[in-house]
Length: 117
Length: 117
Image (cartoon, rainbow over all chains, first blue to last red):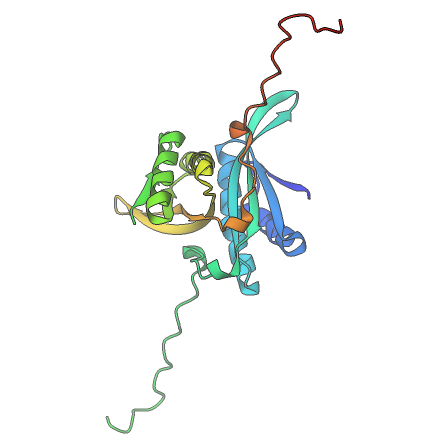
């Protein structure tokens, strides 16, 4: 499985799309980030990916682990997020404020005065 | 359940201890962070908490969600991590480089030349 590498400049929605696609195809995904800004983008991407997958009744969780990676001959500590499908019995968790379902529309205004008025 | 609030200056090991304690007592925990540095510390804390709980055969996963919070009369978007126990059948996931079991010690050097030499 390819590792999705996230940088400080990655767009969370783009990474979220890649996570959702990988989850659909392979059932799990791996996302790697180095440094606070990249980790933050990766976390946001997972939060957004949940909203992409929710209509398909798929929920996901992530498990952060430390990994050593070699970049330009230098050893760095990265965070790798193992993203896994959540077992069905755990679904029903909130998706967060950005994806709350819209409030039900107000009932249509009475077109005419009701009979009792 | 109290929300564990993580700042950019929080020590991941201290937060990890709080997460592990809450998981032991309540079975789940909530961790909240605002801004990339704080989110990074929170993620590291979850990774470390896994290593604290592993000897008790407990694994944890996290689910990041966006939440709106009011801080000093200003609305900010925070990341809240719902930290949940992982179902047992999913255990066996790696804990990461920082917590790999130590390599088995090398066999003791022969104190004397062996009989065949």
